[in-house]
Amino acid sequence: MAKTPTKKVQPKAAKPKLLSGGNPQIAKAYGDEPVQAYIAAMPEWKSDIGRRIDAIITRTVPGVNKAVKWNSPLYGVGEKDHWFIGFHCMTKYVKVAFFRGAQLKPVPPGASKQKDVRYLDIREDGFDEKQFTAWVKQASKLPGEKM
Image 1 (cartoon, helix red, strand yellow):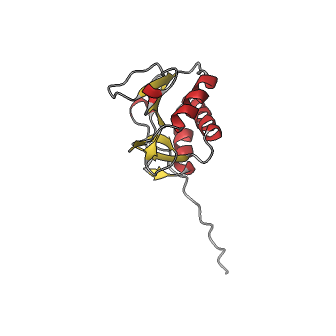
Image 2 (tube, rainbow, N blue to C red):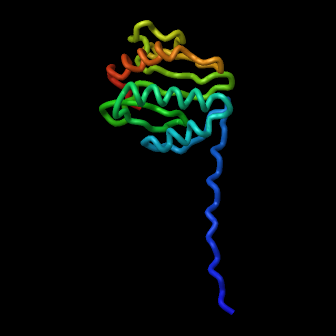
């Protein structure tokens, strides 16, 4: 009796673990793929916000560098490991960090313990995409923060 070949079943990739506040735990990596994995793993409405943030940054800054480090997507231009913006899931909002935000006009509303950093907390009801785009454009032209 001839054996029929057994079909190899590819195991499904495990869903990333969600850390405090629902932040996806994604291994450090460079490129669009880990950023998209992070966004896909963002819980509930936050994934849509992540897609919108990523789309705005990608459209506004052609050739932007992407990475996931410290369980946060980061975006930069120029030198490797120099970033101008990143975001992170919190329990009730997505926290966007402009690493040279104190130099933006108008200055994003969230203060930081770090002199140059400013935050924008995006809640489920959305955000001003026109203003966000203007900040992204400005931030991408400033020297990135080495991380």
